[in-house]
Amino acid sequence: MESKFKTSYRTNINGELNEKDDKKEVTLCGWVQSSRDHGGLIFIDLRDRYGITQIVFDPKNKEIFEDAKCLRREDCIQVNGKVRLRPKEMINNNLSTGKIEVLISNLRVLTKSDVPPLEVEDRIEAGEEVRLKYRYLDLRRPIMQKKLIIRHKLAQAVRKFLIDNGFLEIETPFLIKHTPEGARDYVVPSRVHPGKFYSLPQSPQLYKQLLMQSGFDRYFQIVRCFRDEDLRQDRQPEFTQIDIEMACIEEEDIMNLIEQLVRFMVKEVLNKDVKLPLQRITYKDAMENYGNDKPDLRFELRLTDITEIAKESQFKVFLDAIKHGGIVKCINPEKEFSRNETEAYIEFCKNLGAKGMAWMKFENGNLESNIAKYFSKEQIKKLIDKTKIKKGYLFFIADKEALSNEILTKLRTKLADDLNLIKNKEELKFGWVIDFPLFEWNEELNHYGSMHHPFTAPKKEHENLIEKDPGKVLGRHYDLILNGFELGSGSIRIYDPSLQERVLKALTYSKEDAMKKFGFLLEAFKFGAVPHGGIALGFDRLCGLLQGISDIREVIAFPKNKAGQNPMDGCPSDVDEKQLKELHLKLEIVKK
Image 1 (tube, rainbow, N blue to C red):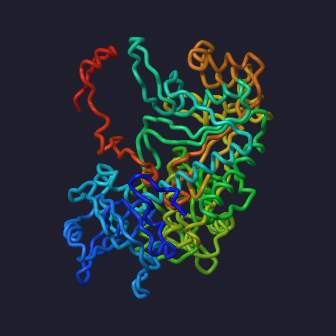
Image 2 (cartoon, rainbow, N blue to C red):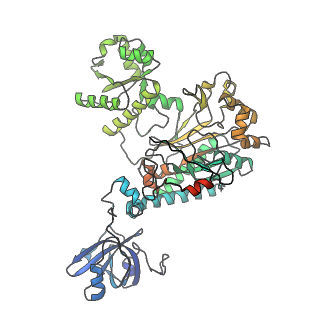
Image 3 (cartoon, rainbow, N blue to C red):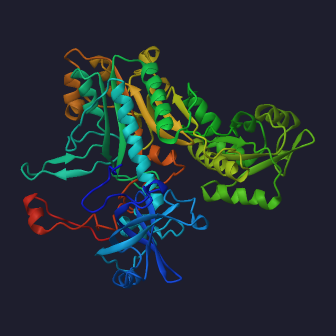
């Protein structure tokens, strides 16, 4: 049977041939992976993205044998030859082509390779900057090709599921009007409109809402988005999300759809099962019990707020923290620690910004430590009852609520690693976080901001609190989480113009300012607006987490480094004076 990969340069791909092809004449192309001279025969592993084929050069064919001697790693070659079975003792069961080899009758060197600056194999990994500078070589490694192949399969699974469920894939513009979305926009100067700028979209948020008002009740897009923000492992200046919007829905409709999508994707790509329905926890419970709104649910190890008990104690460190508006929280790793181990955890917390870490040890039904003397017997009993401690230690952090939660979140993760609390590292523990506050207080600006975005609908029973007590308003907002990461965020949107006006007013937008920033959306709501809602899933993060990878650069073909630069192509780069003049721009760079 003829290979579907047959072209003018090859009859078959590497990784395709097997014992059924014995005595078949074939033409192959690929890169030289390795070369070995065994008893006068030259064996070469020929590699492409499909696999490896062992090819053999016999000295009886003097001309090509001499040429084969000169082949080096990463030379790109084309060969003709006959498939033959390997001797039983030479079979390599680790290769799909391990039962055969190809005796070469003709060799054509397509291109020679310089000595590669990195090894094109999985066992040896170069430094990050070298990998990014020579990304095209890094991507030749089988492990990297596998990552991008899974990314491809995941995208196809998403499209198949959503299209089968009546969704339309519709593109939205990249050159858009600036609207505030929380992070800085990348801006593009307009040549034909001097002094005017486009923004690159942080998401297609307003456009997908407009598509609902246009009658396209089920939209999706695997879309590129842009945010000018500080970089880290799970952030890039440009990233991809699965963007979904639906009309005439409530929360259950979209959450049930996403659960089905998740189950389909994981089964299709990894052949693993996801048990439904997914666990749901409220934002309040997530923050109280785990210290963050994207907890890793693969293990327990919860936090306990003991501020009210600490208020009654005589321990000055706790009392000072509470006096300055802080809290006292603790965690109970159910294990005995040596003094050195305890000191190491104290240093770990200090490095995260803690002033220290207090501790108590549970022994003989009591809590003991150098701070226990500042607690009465009644207070100790309250601590035992509140934390439900049965063994091990209590580790305490006393500081501002946000910092205490941040430190304890990271301490919780470290303890899970140190104590091997995640029994199955490959487990995919999806879940939902619901009932987020609609508003969050912005200390710097001294007014409320959106927890999600200004178009998130409040819970119906909380609409009467918007003006009189915004801090108590819960939104119809839901986050999909996976193994300690936020995988997606969505909400039911506001479609009532008067309700939207009230929410914007609570966010301190004047009517004029709201119309200036969001007028085209608000205008659309005047013409028979339809109820709608949606979600955006981080596609890069999903691709990584399904493969046990937290650094999204590993699943992006050409990512930027931590400084937002691409060492390979040299961007960002200078623009010449002629182009600046055409764009009506003049650079005034402040020297650091």
